[in-house]
Length: 368
Image 1 (spheres, rainbow, N blue to C red):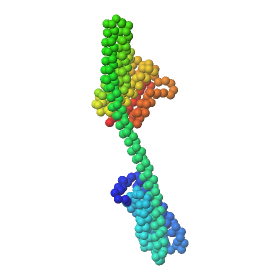
Image 2 (image 1 turned 180 degrees about the vertical axis):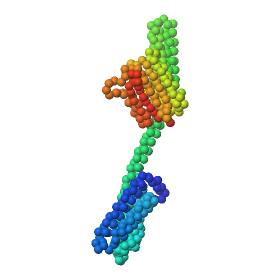
Image 3 (image 1 turned 90 degrees about the horizontal axis):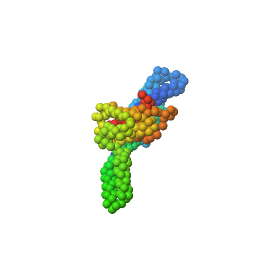
Image 4 (image 1 turned 90 degrees about the vertical axis):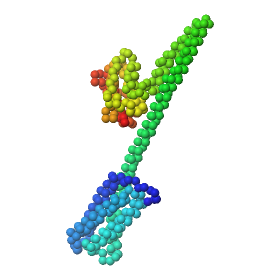
């Protein structure tokens, strides 16, 4: 191994797979060796019992080879180390096995014959070890690929969370700018137009004065209605205080003809301040989309919102008494983009028929 290189922890599944394959190969090689030796012994010199003893020795030495390979983590090393290690271990254990076989059943009358049987033992050990190493490589490669996918997924999730936190901060800044700077400047413009209208009256130009006051009223309308609405869409009012506060203000802004009710469980009241701003934004936007659909498409006159936190999961249920879901395939339209942001977080959204008619919107989101 190169200097300074740290061997990564051995994947347990890869070693277990290598062990099982090695043991099975050792058993098959032992059986094959016994069958071949018996078929070669046409004169019946050796007894079946002694041949079976040789087979047991072959199997035991094969298992020992597998154990040594696992203990040295040979299947998880680099390829040239695997090759060299397998040859050395096969040669050493093959020498030992050949010597034991010679004691049980003498078969080598000279050094040349002994070396031939030793080479056969080495080949047998390589047959036992090589598939085990190959299988462990395949399993380890699969584990590394799976770990890489998990790491990439976590990295993407962290990057998404960072982008969403940055988006929430930018939304807050834009909303504060609209609510503060832009509205204040519109107030000044309106006051200036009113002052010009007074001067026009003094100059005996009532038509011009009326026109200026009309423009001043239009600016006030834009400031009070349009700018406030855009500011709320960018960053809902009260979201800094908490999700319950923000959604309560959303329900309060509905038309007076719509009856509303809202319930928040004790779990949410305790966890409200710990919910990240990005998650509050997502929940608030989804609820507003559901309310818009209930009023615009379902023509609802009553909506009920229920929020709860249980087992680190925020659950939101929005019921209405509208016309309900259309027959056939339900098109979520605007809810699709909210689903796309909920699912990577482990959350979800679904549209269901209401318990007493109308439509039920359910969403859930794990929270830390």
